[in-house]
Length: 295
Length: 295
Image (cartoon, rainbow over all chains, first blue to last red; front, side, top):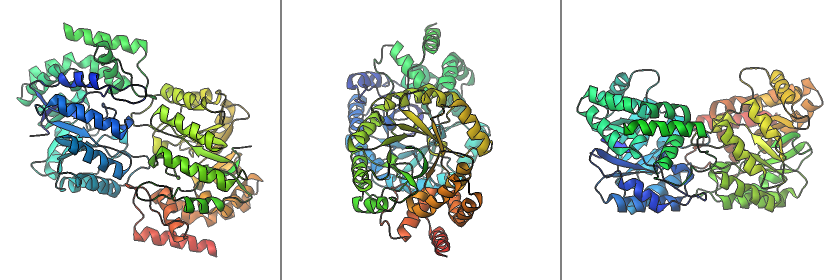
C-alpha cells in the first residue's frame, strides 16, 4: 500500500538562486532506502516546494526517481497557487516516474470549500496517480470541512489524507470521526511529528514525517514499534526524540531540520530567503539534541 | 504626497493562462485618471499579483505607466514568496517607471518578525522608490508587531503602511497608537473599504480602496468629503455603498469586484483558478447593488 507506515520527507537543498543541489539531494534520498521507510515525500512543506520553480521541482523529481529506483514509493508534492500550475506539476511528476501525488491547498486569497474542491478535482484528473490531500492549516490557513474531505475521497484518484494533529479532540476520536465518514480503503495519516507515534498506535495508516527525512532509522523504528502495537518500545524512541519535538514546536520543524542537516554534514545549503537560519543559541540546542541520540 | 487620499486598486484582467489583457487593463486605468484619485495601486491583492508571473506583472506595469502618463502616481505591488523574486519585481517596477512600491509579506512557512524585517530590508534597498508596507493578515496571515513597523519605518525608503481595520480597538485608538510610534512624515492608511471613510474622518492619510478601482468617482467623492471633515457628506456616500460592503464581507471583495466589473462591461476575464466566480444568487445581488447607485 502506497500510503502506509512512515513517509519520510527530506529537505530539498538548493542554492541562493533556488537551484536544487542534485548531489546533496541524492545523498539525502540514499539514506531513506532502508526497511521501515514506507515512502518518500518529496517536495512537501519540508521540501520547500512552494519556493521552487517548476523546472527545479522537475530536476528534484528526476533525481529522486533515479536514486530511489522503485525500492521506495515516491510521493511528490505538486501544490501551487494557480490550478493550471498545480496541474502542470502533477503532469511533470507523472512523466518523471513518481508513484503518487501530494497536494496542499496553497492560497493567497482565502479559498472557499468549493474552490478547493474544484482545484483538487482538476489536479486529480490530469494523471492516474493516487493523490494525497495535504491538510496543513499551519501553512495554508485553509480548513477542510469533513464534507469536503468526503467529496474529495469520492474522486477516483484521491486516496489518502495527511491530517494535522487535532486541536480540539483526541487522536483516537479524530480517527474515529474520519474513518466513519471516509471509504474503508482511504488512507488516513498524520503529520506533526511529536504526535505521530501516538497516531500510529491509535491505528492511523501513515506518519508523514519531517524527522523521518533526516533520521530515517530512528523514525522507522518508532513507526514499526507503534504499528505492531508495542507501546513501550514506541514511547521509548519517541522520548529519545523529545528534544527535537520541543525545538520543532518552538522554531518550526523546517528551520530545525535545516540546522540539523547542516550539522550532520548532509547539506551546505540554507533555507530559501526570507526564511532565516536558526540563531546561535537554537543551533546549540539542535547540536545537543543530536548528541543525546548518540548515547 | 504619494500616499495620500484615495488609492484606487484595479483588478488585472487576464486570460485562463494568466496572460494580462492589456486592452481591458488600459480601459480600467483610464477611468482612474480623475480628480480625487490620489494614486493607483496596481498589482495589489485585488490586482491578483500573487497569481501572475514576473513577465505578466511587467506587462501590466508597462501599460499602467503608459496610460497614467504621470497624471496619477503609480504604486506597484511587488510581493513574492522568495526574497530574490520580490527584489526582482521591485527592480522591474522601477525600470518600468513606477512611482512607489507596495509589498505584502507573502509566506508559506509562517515568517518570524525578523524574517519579515530582513525581507523588507532587502527589497527596500534595491530601488530608491518609496515603499508601502502591505499589512494584510487576511491573505498573508502574518501579524506585524508594532516594534517591527517601527523598525521598518526607520529604513530609508519605507514610507507608508496599509493597515487592516483594527479588530480589538477603534480606528481612532489604532491611529493614535501608530502615530505615536511612527515618524511624523510616515503615512498611515487603511484598507477594508467599509471602514475607510471612517478612517479618513479619523485622520488617516490614505484609503487603499478596492471599490476605488471600480467606481473611482464615488470613492473619490467619499474620500474628499471625509478628508475635508464633512462627516455627513462622507457618511451619505458610504451608506450608498453599503450593499457593496455587505457583499465584500460575505464573498470577499475580489470575487465581488470581478462580478461587478463583468456586469459593467469592463472585463470579460475571470478570476484566476482556483478562485471561482460568484454563484448566480450573489451575482444578482451585485447587479442590484450596482442598480441602486444609478438612483
